[in-house]
Amino acid sequence: MLVSTVELAWRARRGAELGLAGAAGVGLDWGEVIARKNHIVSSWSKGKDKALERQGMAVLRGRATFRGPHELQVGDQIVTAEKIVIATGSSPARAPIEGIEHAVTSEELLNRTILPERMVVIGGGAIGMELGFAFGRAGTQVTVLQSGPHVLPLIDEELRTALVEIAHYAGLDLRTNVKVRRITSARAVEAEIAGATHQFSGDVVLAATGRPANTEGLGLGSLGIHTERGAVPVNEYLQSPTAPHIYAAGDVTGRHQHTPVAWYEGKMAAENALKGNHRGVDFSLLPTSIFTIPAVAQVGLTEAEARKQGFTFGVSRSPFEDNTTAAIRGATEGLVKVVYDEPTGRVLGVHILGAGAEDLIHIAAVAMRGGLKRQDLAEMHYVFPTLGGAVFDAMWD
Image 1 (cartoon, helix red, strand yellow):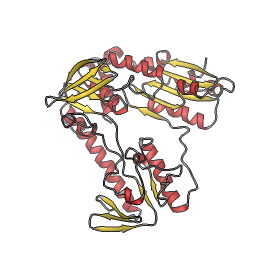
Image 2 (spheres, rainbow, N blue to C red):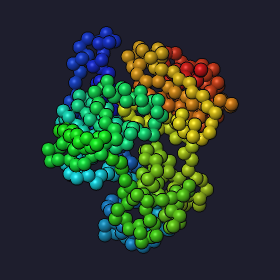
Image 3 (tube, helix red, strand yellow):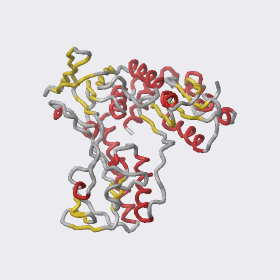
Image 4 (spheres, helix red, strand yellow):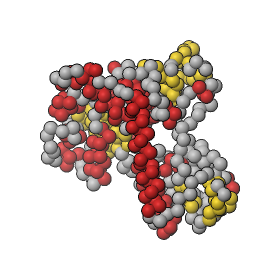
C-alpha cells in the first residue's frame, strides 16, 4: 500500500503532461502515509483473528515450543495434537556485517514517520528494489548495494535491463558486485567494489538481505527435524520426511515467499494432515510480481530458462509506448514479452514491466493454465483502449 500511495503521488506530479494545472505541487505527508498503512494492516490482522474464533477455533497467543513429538507448550499451557502444521512465517535477516546494528530492517523502516533525505539499501532483491523505488519516487536519494552481478537476478534479463534503465532515470544509484565491509555508527556503509574501497552515507541504512524462516526456539531438533538454512524441509504434500505427523506451510518452508503461496499451502497442509496426503503442491504456473514503480510481473519460463530446458522457442513483444491507454495515461515505460514454443505455439512464459503489471499478469496465467496457445490469444477480441490489450498484442510476431 506504501508503494501504491507513492506511485499515485509520483504520477500526479507528472500531471502537467496531461494538462493538469498545479499537479507538480502534490506532496506526501509521510507521517499520515505510515499511519494509514498501520491502520489498514491492523484492521486486516484483527479481522483474521476474529474470523478464526467465529468458526469455533481456539486461538492461543504466545510463543510455542515443542516438548514432545505431539506436545507443545504455549506460555503456561500444554497443547497436544495428533498432527501439527507449522506456519510461523519469516522475519527480516540481520546479515553478519560489522555494525549491522546501525541498520534497520524493512519492518522498522516502514514504521518511521519521517521520510529520509538519503538511504543506503544493502541488497538488490525484491524487498530492496521495491523499497528503493518507493523511497526514491517519494524524494529520497537512494543507493542500492547488491552483492551479485545483477539486481533482481531471477527476473527475465531483458526486463531487468529495462528496469535498471528506469531506475537510473528515477535517480536510484545501483551498484553491483559489492562487498559490504561494515556500517559505521554515523550510518556510512564501507564497501569494496572491484578492489577499491567506497563509502556510501545515508540518514538510514536498510538491510534487505532476505527473510529467514521463524524456527528458532521451536525445538524442532528434538523431533528429528533438521532445518535447512533455518527452514523446515517438506515433501510435495508439505509433510516433514523425518517427522511424518508434522506439516509446514508458507515462508517457514523457505521456498516461495509470497502471501498467496502461504494461503495455498496452508489450506493444503491442513487438508493433507487431516485427510491423508491426497494432493501435492503445483508451482508449474506461479504468477509473481515485484512492486517497483513501475512493477514487474512474470509467469512461466524466462527466455534463459526456455533455452536451458532445450525448447525451440520464439519471443514476441509489445512495448507500452505502442499501447493507446498507456499513452493516454502518460505511463509508457516498459513492455510485455512472450516466450513461446515454436513447434506448438504453447505459451511458455509471459513477462511484463509497466503500469498495472501486477494485474495484467493474471491474463497470461489463466490463459496458460487453460492451455490456450499464442495464436488463440492473438486472435481474441479485447476491450480497446486498455492496458490489458498489450498482453494480447504481444502474442503477435
